[in-house]
Length: 117
Image (tube, rainbow, N blue to C red; front, side):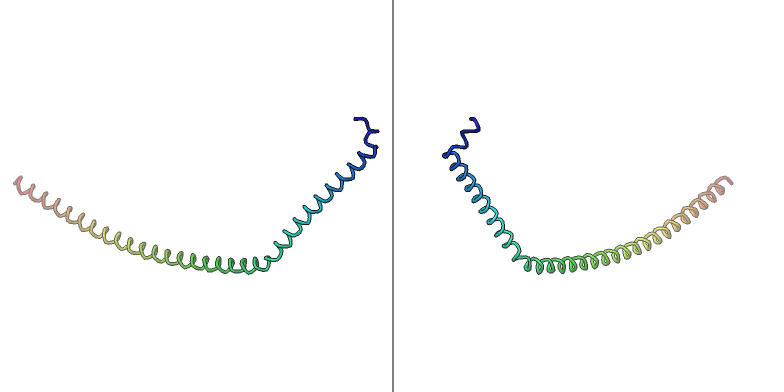
């Protein structure tokens, strides 16, 4: 279409109505988004209370975790002490067994020497 046809009366009226429709649609869209932002700003006070509650909950959870860690460390220390005691007992038993084996070896050597005579 040539440019001079848009200058006619009918097209000018159509451009005005399209422009007005676009302005109206844009303003309604902005108004709807503006109300949503205002609605979201109102519960911000509620969110701060929720955030404080969440922070308190996180602190309590951290304290509980610290207590559980301390209890686990105590249990581990006790288990390590028990294991050390068991290791000492096992070492003592091994020493006794070695001594008994040495005595048995000495007795066998003595029996061999007597058998040779």
